[in-house]
Structure formats: structure tokens, C-alpha cells
Image 1 (cartoon, helix red, strand yellow):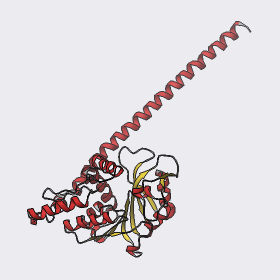
Image 2 (spheres, rainbow, N blue to C red):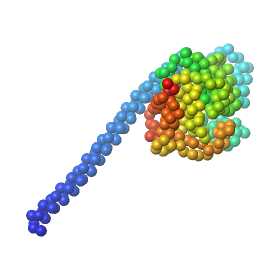
Image 3 (cartoon, one colour):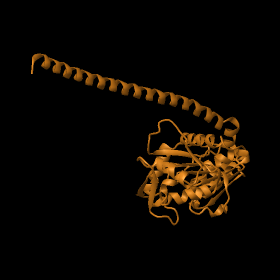
Image 4 (tube, one colour):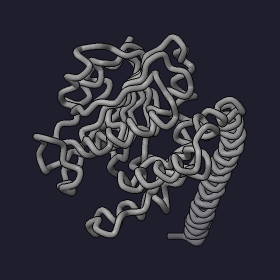
Length: 326
């Protein structure tokens, strides 16, 4: 090999090395720019969301609504009545919803002394992480999502798995024509009925029922169907979704914790005994984000849209979906 050929090969090799390094550097710069752009877009989205959420909260908690929320009936109660209410609330507790009944009376959310340790831990987590602001923000997303499609004054509302009725009662306060709350546990229904009584609400009722059954409503359809925090406790989530669709007249709001994972899957686990539904199995099938979305579509919801909020990851977390029956 002559000297000229060797020099040429060395120059070509050096050229390729420089090019490779340059291309890697360009790829790195492009990646960094893409990441910076994504972060800027997310920050912009978070700012816009914060502004919109603040506006929604102002709308949700306007003077008339706050008056009805905190003070209905409170002005005409004497000290003896308030003391009796406070005692009864304590006897019925602990409560899940952060109710404020006026006159300084709030629903107690702390576990009682005789509460089993596992349940005591659960209620301690509720108090710490699910405060009044947490519930208010969930209510904001719920009502501003569904009220884009229905007029409360002309609409019926059903809350399947209502616990002690917080969101059902919020719907009644917002003027839905008729509100029905269903839960599998009688103690939850007793608390919800008492809360409605204290607020003086006549457009809401509560019944003990099972998401697989729904016999108390006798095949009726409701303009709005809400089901939150239920799907990840079920052995038969597809059957439950079919039942929920059967009572949805217009729009459904389905929310709950989802499993981490890609694709339309269900994560099989065993559940705590305190969450077993009557007649259900100990195994639960927790959907991934895509699993819940696809399952809603497959059972017959015409369109399924996620209610977006800042900071959501690609999988897992608490997810909220609107499903349309027509």
C-alpha cells in the first residue's frame, strides 16, 4: 500500500470519527431541546390548568352555594340540638366525607378506639391525604366535566358506590332534579341519609345496593351516572361496567385507581376483607389506564374521554373518564 493511499484511509477514518461524534452531539442537543420543549409545554399547561381550576372553584363555591353548603338549617338550631347532632355524628363515625354542617359542627373522620388496626390506618390516611381541599378539587372536576353536557335542573343523577354520600349531596346542592346514592354498606347509607337530613335536602335519597345488582332502581336510566373508587375492588369489572352502562342515560363519570402497566390489561390481586362486596370473590382485577378505557368502549360506551389534570403519568394513578351512552 503506497503512502498516498494510507493517508487517504487515515483521513477518511478521522472524518467518519468526527462525523459520528458530531451526529451524537447533534442527537443529544435535539433530545435536550425536545425535553426542554416538553417541560415548557407541561409548565404552560399546569399554569393554564391552575387558572382554570381556580375559576372553577370560584364558580363551584359561589356565595349561594357556600351558604347552602355550610349553613342550611344551622341558624335555627339551638345549643342543645347542636350537642345532640355532634354526639350522633360521633356515634355514626368515622366519616369519609369532610362534611361541615355549620355552627362549628363537622363530621368526625378519626377512627374510634375500638376500630381494627388496618381500618384505623386507612382512616388515618384519609384524614392526612384526602382533606376537604382534596374532595373539593374532585368535585370541581366532576361537576364541571358533566355539566358541559347536562343541565342539573333538568337532569337526574345516580352515584354508584357513594360511600357516605359526599358527592351525591354535592349534586343535590347544585340543583340536580333527582339524586340517588347507592352503596353496598348499610352504615354508609345511614350516614348519607343523616347528612342529607341535616342539610335539609329533599331531592336526594340513598339505598343499599350492589354494583352487580342495582335492583333498587328497577331498570331506570339516569342522565348522569357516577362511579368513583369502585372498579379496583371488583372481581368482575366488565360485568360491573355493563351494569353501569345499563343505567346511564347520557353521560357517565367513572374514576378510580389504576394499575401500572402498558396496554389494556388487568392486574390480579387479593383485596382486603373490609372491601369485599356481598357475594364477590377475594380476587380483584385492577385495570391499567388503557384497560379501563378500552373496557368502557368494549361494553358499549359510544365515546370515552379522559378528564386530564396536571402531572398525570402515562400509566397508573387515579384516572377519571367520561363515557357517553349515546
